[in-house]
Length: 146
Image (cartoon, rainbow, N blue to C red; front, side):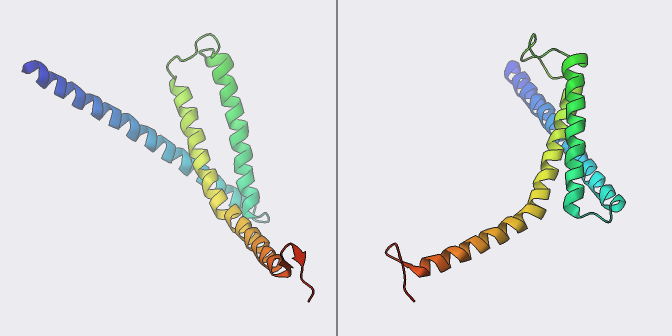
């Protein structure tokens, strides 16, 4: 019976450890998301003569450059080499780059929702209204003579 109590205790501790790890990852991603938004806001203040979408693209460019530099550093210098040690545990730097990139992807999703959704909605409505006019003009595959 004492063994089952130990088993329950160890499962509970693993759950707590797992929950802590997930919570820490969530906080790191939220912090990186906040960092991308603060970079966007600073670009908006620095480039007042440019539009908001331009500043969003500057953040995208910054993410691309930073990701390439960090990935090259991890792959070529810090290691482990991914072709000789596939499936090895992640290093703390790899986890940090993952959180940085996930935070950026959430930022990019917000930018898509903010900027592109409105434009695509207008294009869709214009396309849809053109299709309805076209449908009214055609009858049985032939253009109606009005």
